[in-house]
Length: 94
Image 1 (cartoon, rainbow, N blue to C red):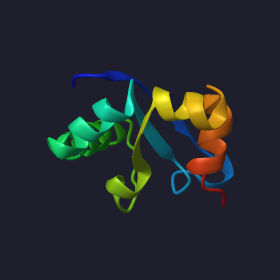
Image 2: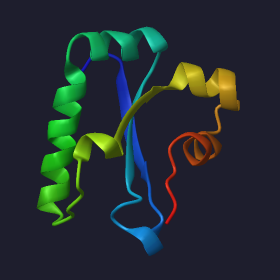
Image 3: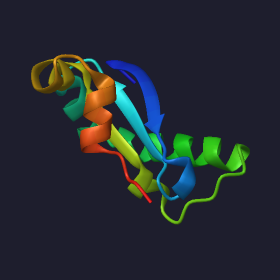
């Protein structure tokens, strides 16, 4: 996946697994858009589903737990603070 950097997650263990959110991070907004335009979001969902299955974690809709973001937007909107960005943008609490 060109431009893909890393992935992370957020979870409220009191509401696990419903609160689990997985974030795939690309370098730039252009990289993110290219990946989505190329249908790689489906691949990211498939890979996430496989990892969750291997870990014996069941969620109702894997796609609802998968997000795509980029370093560029985090720097601009959150000063590069991923913890803050994830809590504000993706965290689901029980």
